[in-house]
Length: 366
Image (cartoon, rainbow, N blue to C red; front, side):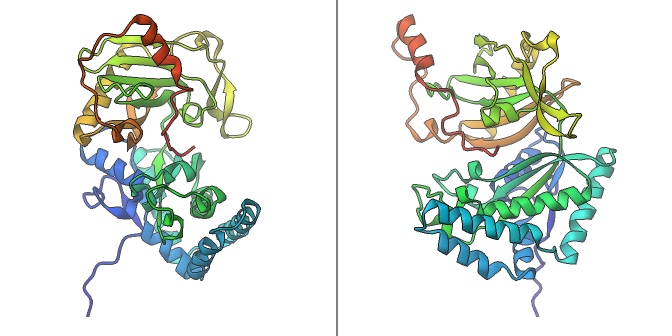
């Protein structure tokens, strides 16, 4: 008789069993690691890859899922889009097995209890096993939904994340490291996490993503939720910080007239006007920049390699870690010495503006 403990359908990121657990996928697994290391990660739980597979089997869709992936290989884009739309609709309409639905409802109720907030707004994030593949950027192909409230809406968006496994972008994605990866039977976790009502948010890199300079931390931020920075919809203010002295060696403050926040008219996340008194004001003060740069350095030291980090600062001034992933562009190259031949000021300026933005290699969820 087997004594193997069944894999859980819901796993909290602060559970000792969560750290390093592949049931949480790449993205949420990283947050479990950050939580275990003592970093300020908003509370949440993962609806595990076992839950996803249980859903497919219960709904009679497991074999069809394999057929969909196989049919997409070599098909033209129009055919892939048709296959994707049809199967995604099937997933979104399928009933959840009763035990799984109950586990998700209990998890959401417990998150409400832990945070002391009824009808708690949460972020619902896809976290795939395939995000762990070397040289792949599946994270940029999957879905995230913000400000989801109530168990019914949560269940609907969990299905949407599962359906995202068969989006046209995923079915046509071919990582250089493994062109057949799309055919593999990868699972997906859906992370459910308390929303941070962000005063400001954005991303930061523990190297300069334009030049690869590892002696710098680059912080990009905007008013409101970080969706604007992540999606590229808002030009962020940018701060370059020396990783040793924490001096801000460059700051580019951008006028911001719109921000991503909850739109009172729709009760959903959208673009709303920035209060007039904030439009020309930096979204971060020097104390917050210093705290973020030091946080980035600690995370890099903990993980032992350059990192790409999403962050948020609440209205109360608390700094939260929302996502952490390895930086994948410059980290694959040999590190340059920190002390090099001094370049002219002209070359320095040209180097800073040579890249088109700093989103290259970001590979994140929108």
